[in-house]
Length: 424
Ligand code: COA
Picture 1 (cartoon, rainbow, N blue to C red):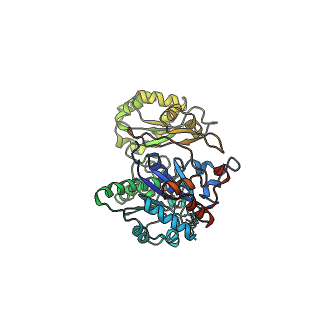
Picture 2: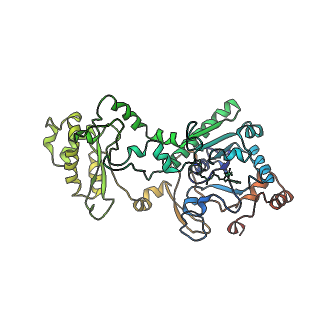
Picture 3: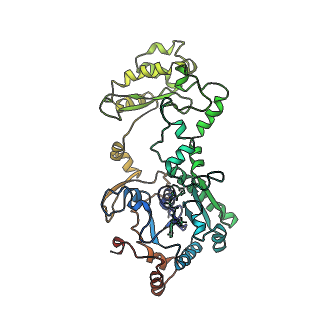
């Protein structure tokens, strides 16, 4: 038995944000029915293709454990089929551009009238306000949610990050909203709307910077290295390079081989409780008692000198040697691991965080598995569906259509033809 077994989800999502959410719910055991446009499907099936004619990794890595049905939501018969699915599902999830679902005829009022217990979960770029009608992609959310203005180096332009905090981050927020609404429904008997705006999701993940914005009104941010460098602060939280976002100063330091290996670096944290161990480790035992270095406050204006000195030591060792030595002394640090190293890391394979999946048209590929581990509901990762692979199966199982009903749906153009691969 899986945690969400028995929960049926009408998955009207596309691209990354919505599919992240429904993939998580599928991994937790929900029956996720992905609705796609006949003949076209989720646009990501064909984006960034690495194998000709096969679904892209973009698509396959976001749509595991789902079933695919193709329905033209603008065809009258297609609409009727969708209405049947709304009645049969517990949750409907969508991340269309603002207004698209309404234009298809599926307003919240109509959805509720069809199924008062349904939970309608939506991702939009922005919440109510001046930008509510805008289409939004990942980097737009990173820029409007506070991440870009606080990422990068002080003397460079704003930067977006590789972590998809706008798309996948908001999908994760939405999934939490959905399970909370499912829980509330067990008591209220009613469905409800769940919405997550990408700007809000990014801002939630950047809350430490909003904290610092307020601290800045009371004085300089002493743990930002620019403070120690004597550079005055402006009125907004600056980009702080690799400064730690918390109370324990940190920085990324070169390790042996950095001249040729772009990832021969380590994040090193000068955590106060282990300061003495750090001094011994780097050959600076005198710093343990020197009043300029002995206390966290004394160290704050000298962070640049401290990290330069630690780096002289880390550059004599590989990042893994530094990691081993530091951990023996309880000093927190993190080697910069490349995607190549992560893909090959055996412990991540063992925990199912990285999985190898087979696919009929592209062959085996690596994917990130479920990062959330439940002891009573372990996740198995199944390949993503081919376009329309389960159309007939869903019409029969969920809507109880017979041969005649399926033929009628097909003839009306409501469900389209399954993809060649799915048909085979
Ligand atoms: N049957 C019939 N029509 C369908 C359909 C189906 N099964 N599935 C989608 N469509 C239609 C929609 O109804 C819409 O038609 P309309 O514009 O005539 O109303 C159309 O396809 C396009 O949908 P839209 O969402 O506007 O796609 P887009 O490619 O133009 O925009 C986004 C993509 C991601 C920018 C946009 O969907 C968006 O802003 N989403 C919300 C924020 C978000 O999730 N962004 C991150 C994505 S990773």
